[in-house]
Every structure is written in structure tokens, then in C-alpha cells.
Length: 385
Ligand SMILES: *[C@@H]1O[C@H](CO)[C@@H](O)[C@H](O)[C@H]1NC(C)=O
Ligand SMILES: *[C@@H]1O[C@H](CO)[C@@H](O)[C@H](O)[C@H]1NC(C)=O
Ligand SMILES: *[C@@H]1O[C@H](CO)[C@@H](O)[C@H](O)[C@H]1NC(C)=O
Image 1 (tube, rainbow, N blue to C red):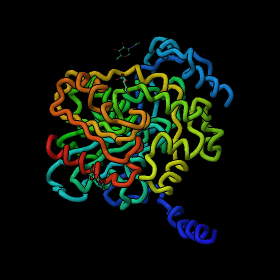
Image 2: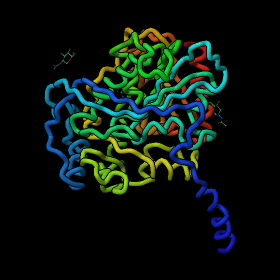
Image 3: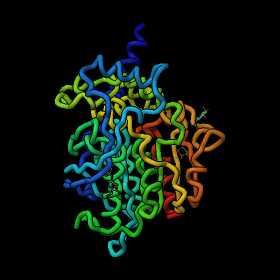
Image 4: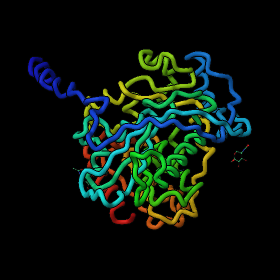
């Protein structure tokens, strides 16, 4: 018995290594709070607001059971244009090396996925190996990351009729237009090139951007994403549609019942992480600092287009080989291969490249060797943009 107890005691310090959060500010980054009056199409939800946890569970069953409609648009009324005042928190970072202040840098516009805020992109401290922004700025790029509506330090809006996919696409389009023109903030110079990098739901939005406004992007990197929606149901079921207000009352107690999350760190691991290629402290941190998703986002995924035949610039689709949500935990043949429709949807991308990162789940940044795939992305952009 004793050696077993001893060795488990000895391994304790490893388990409790703290991942600093929120991120200590990097000197090359400027936090911004942006006030925007956004006009966008919204699809009125025809279902009543969720009353309580029982009601949320019942809704999950309605979405996933035998009699679930495969077409959620039955739950939506015809779109109307809404105008909402938003406060969006963003972070602009300048290159740390390969930087010529006389020459405008290329800019990566980073959009995070469900369950996170913008700190997904600089997870942990500036020097951790999970920090995408540190890798991109060291490779000579500027970055612009932002908290999507209802996450991080951005304003919390109606989770039924405002926090919807088309509204978030309108926000990304707005930022892209303004950044490209150099008019978003006097602190952000007009970039020489602008590329979009998304994670998961952020990839859905980046994909929809080049499908609707192909002229606005010089290149796209879609991470934690495929065009196969067969396995999203596993994610939905694993969340159990917990009310965020009940799950983390200290952080989300005042949120509407339309803000949902999963139950605990093991549900988080199931959807986001490939065991054992992550530090337990990273999972603890991701769970403690997670952000909820909304009913409106879920129901409107299909209300933005994916086919981007007019887009003729570079696209890299890169995913963990074990992504649960977009591949059912095995991406072989799904990202690129017999089960992939991506080559048809991106018929004129030049080039269109695919990459599977080994031993990695959906939350790609949070795994061991994340710097390995960060380098794949920056090499691709160096070569093609
Ligand atoms: C919403 O606004 C857009 C852009 O002005 C317009 O093209 C569209 O017809 C409007 N939609 C509705 C339902 O009013
Ligand atoms: C998703 O991948 C599975 C393979 O597991 C395949 O059977 C299915 O047709 C694919 N779906 C789509 C929409 O590509
Ligand atoms: C880390 O990732 C890179 C990029 O995918 C890969 O080339 C390398 O083999 C990986 N290293 C390990 C130890 O898995």
C-alpha cells in the first residue's frame, strides 16, 4: 500500500500546478473596449424561454431524441433586422520579432469558439506553450482577438434573439471592414494583409465571412472544425444543457436561462481534450474560466452559408486528429478524404490545405505540443499570404 500512497502523494504537486488566469498582460498588447451599434438579421425564436433546469433538459431531449427535427428552422420565425448597442472587449498585439515599425504588419483576426472567451488565444501566461498569440506575434504577425457577444468582458445580451450566429457574423464582418480600412481604432494601423483565424464556432463564423464577403479576407485558417455535422449531437448531449446560472452561480447567477453550459470538468474533457495529452491544471483552469453558450447560437448555426466559391485565396483547415465535435474523435478521412465536402465548398481556394495535429482533441490550444501546430499555421501563412 505504502509505495502506492507515496507515489500518488508525490504526483500531487504536478496536479496542482497553477495556470495563471486571467493572463498577465503582455507588453506588446493593448486592451480595447469598443462601442458598436450593430445592425444584423435576427431570427425570432418561436419557442418559449427556458423556465428552469428541467425545462432545459427537456429541450435537449427535443433536440436530440428520436423525434428531433433535423431542421431547427421550424423553431425560427422570418428574420428581422435588429440594431443593438454592444460593448466589445478586444486585444490588439503587435509583432515581437521580425517587426519593422516602418512597414505595416500582417494581421490575424482571431475568433474564439463556444465555451471560451478571447483568452483561448493567449491561454495561461505570456510564456506558456498554450499561447497562440505569443507564437503568432513571434512569427511577425499582429493579432486582434475579441470576446464574442456574451463572453469575457463583452456585453451580455439576450441569448435567444440577439446572441445568434448571423448577428455574430455581422460583428466579425464589421471588425474586418474597419480593421482592413485602418479605422477601428487610432491604436491599430491599417495592416498590409488581413487573415482570419477561427476556432470551432469561430471557424464557422470565419467560413461564413468568406462565403458572404470573400473580398474582405486575404487568407483563412479554420481550426477545430470540419464540415461534418454528424457528431455535434455528441457535444450537445454531453453538455446536458445545464443552466449557466445554476452551474457557476458566482460568475453567472444573474444570467438568463438561455445561457447554457456543460456540467463539470469531465464533460469539458470529453468534448475538448485528448487524454492524456493535457495537464490536469489546464483542464481545471479551462473549466473554472469557461463561458456559456446560448440557445440562439445553437439554433442558428445553419443560418449562415458555408460554400465560398468566390474565395480564391489560401485556406488551411487544421484540426486535432481526435476532435470529438467535428469528427467523432477520429478525424481520419473526415477533415480531408472520402467524407469531406470541404473541397467542393472551397472549390477555388488557392491553395486549400489540410492538417491533422497528432494526439489532440477539439480544444487544440490546450494540448501538449500546441506550439507544433502553431508553427504549421504560421509557416502556411508565411508561404502563401
Ligand atoms: C435587412 O437589412 C439588409 C441590409 O440593409 C437588407 O438587405 C434586408 O432586406 C433587410 N432585411 C429585412 C428582413 O428587413
Ligand atoms: C460525416 O462522416 C461520416 C463518417 O463517420 C460519414 O458517414 C458522413 O456521411 C459524413 N457526413 C457529412 C455531412 O459529410
Ligand atoms: C508536434 O507537432 C508538430 C506539428 O504537427 C509535429 O511535426 C511534431 O512531430 C510533434 N511532436 C511530437 C513530439 O509529437
